[in-house]
Image (cartoon, rainbow, N blue to C red; front, side, top):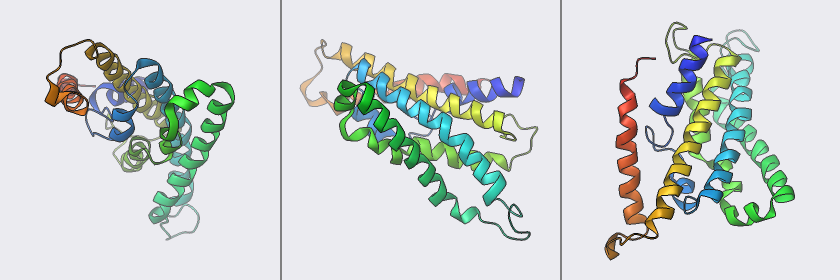
Length: 208
């Protein structure tokens, strides 16, 4: 249980997909103009992470890994194709649910909802998981069972959700600020994201 919470906290604050690895920046910058839309996209990304990463973990450890299906055969080279297929399938399901139950959110997210399928934060989490499967089980970053995969998925999703909601809240406030004309729009947004990333670096000293 201690390792579960260590993975969860690290993936939210220390190994944050946005502020540590800068993954998923396209939708992060485009959909962070208001909190409601950002929260909707963040929850969608969290759901996709929680479903796809454990499935991809099982694929990696039961199907693609060395000697999993045929002794002496390593199918890890197929991981990109299969991981993307799993992610795309879950995103399609999310898109249909959002369109059915929240048409306003579906309209506000626009093209960025189906683009979750190619959100590099989600694919990055699966690829990092693939690396961590081979780590020494005593390592604080190792993913050695399905529970660890869930913890990493939840933490990565929450980390991305926290990042986009915080930026959206700041950008809403900045609409009422006297930002210098050359910095309006993406200019001040990039500066804000950089400052937020520097602030999150404070967590890198946590020994979890």
